[in-house]
Image 1 (spheres, rainbow, N blue to C red):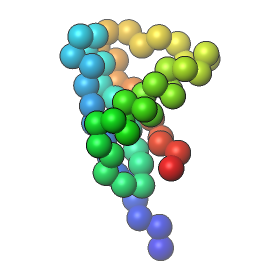
Image 2 (spheres, one colour):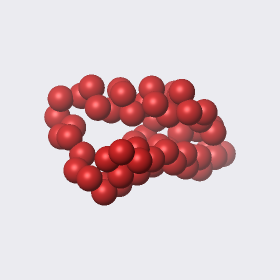
Image 3 (cartoon, one colour):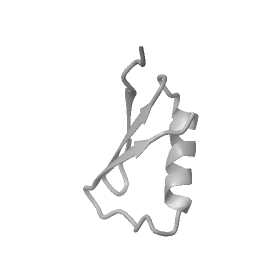
Image 4 (cartoon, rainbow, N blue to C red):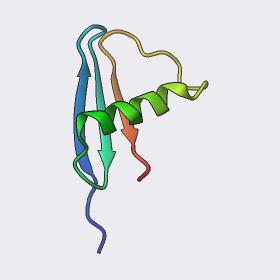
Length: 60
């Protein structure tokens, strides 16, 4: 039976963006930043506006 994904939260306090990262395990800060960099590197993901909440599904 598959476990539900773990919800990891990190905030960008400068731009007031909240990132919700769903993964199979609890992620540390470096792993969360890596997922955010990967998300932002894709060209069709437009730049987030101030106060946005971004949901990312991590690929393990």
